[in-house]
Amino acid sequence: MPTSRGKDSLRVLSAEVVGCVRCARLRAYCEAVARDKRRAYLDWDYWGKPVPGFGDARARIWIVGLAPAAHGANRTGRVFTGDRSGDFLFAALHRMGMANQGTSLHRDDGLRLEGVFVSAAVRCAPPGNKPLPGEIGNCSEYLDREWDLLSEARVILALGKIGWDAALALAKRHGCDFADGKVAFGHGAEMRLNDRRRLIGSYHVSQQNTFTGKLTMEMFDAVLRRAWK
Image (tube, rainbow, N blue to C red):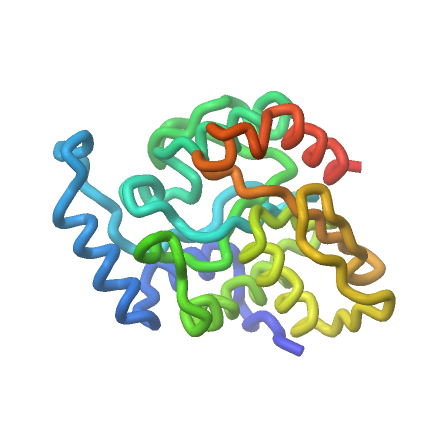
């Protein structure tokens, strides 16, 4: 079973994530996006590096998403920050009293989370928002270390099937045997990972899902309330 490093901390892990160069395809893509900026963000100094997790080190809920958005977190340097997915997510956390504000615009905007930590299966923006299996595997160590460091987290809230599958693989690596069988991903799906952690699934907070009504505010709020119990 994976173990955390002797002097590991979320701060140490964050620095290692930012400096990661394991996936040549992802690094090349992120740097190209940072160089060839979207017209609306020409005055931005794009982050262009891997994006670490963000939130409360004593979180009860650990949210695992897919990956940074090319012109969202890859631009701002903070997970789910600067795009419509983040607008939806942090507005919901604010309604639940888990965030001090409902917007997430840039790294220095004063946002604070309480009882929640947010990270992703992949830490670099992938082309087409579709990471390769090997790239998900390369990032798995970071989830392993967050598993140990977020010792008070009682629920992993997986956004989308990739987040769900990454959480199942993570739990298996940490000794969870799923004696009662695995549960298929779906919005509101839930399964017990071990005696202290549950996994809950939600449709991803992507613009595609929220603009089409596949995922509504009411649906996501209900999942957050369940996760907090």
